[in-house]
Length: 256
Image (tube, rainbow, N blue to C red; front, side):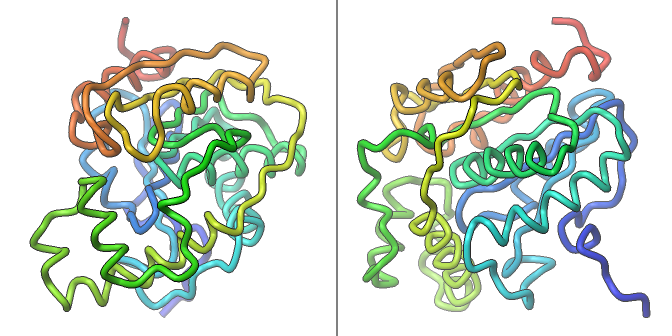
């Protein structure tokens, strides 16, 4: 049996055809399957959900110890997979921070910038007004479960099932460790258009903190509000897909 490459591990859903590739990064504890329903829903855009280690198809893979190690491998995967074609990056919650550092790593390597960067559910990286409820150190399993209930987005059947919790909590703890160990480093803004999607009732990242992403680009910036909380972008799929069709209309084959 052929040994799986990093690209095989990170990209679990085959190689769709499209005019631009949209790499989707999930929230802490989340997985590539969060974005599987988007595949084939954006016209000619090839949706490419990314699978972090320790979950679903990568259940046996060890998590990354920090952000640098994570984006170091991921940058190579994306640069190889784009095949010198246009691409965009979408990240939700922790995935937005990973996407931000991924784009900076690609820039450091001299690779091509994405055509667009879309973020949701995440304060701008320079925002320092606190997300203390998500500090990983010392959190018990019970406290993490309580926080997941507060944010929504995780079925109660999962949170009440010890077998399921044994599967999802290690990946979530690993992601929270990456988040807690992350330190923002000021650098010149990106020359990449950024679109930010903000839930009006998001307890983790309010509208003001998400709008602060405008400081991270010298290109276009737009914010769109969705009624709802931290997972509004996943719960209101049609609205989110409409915004993605908008920003990727040059490649999606749609008009806006």
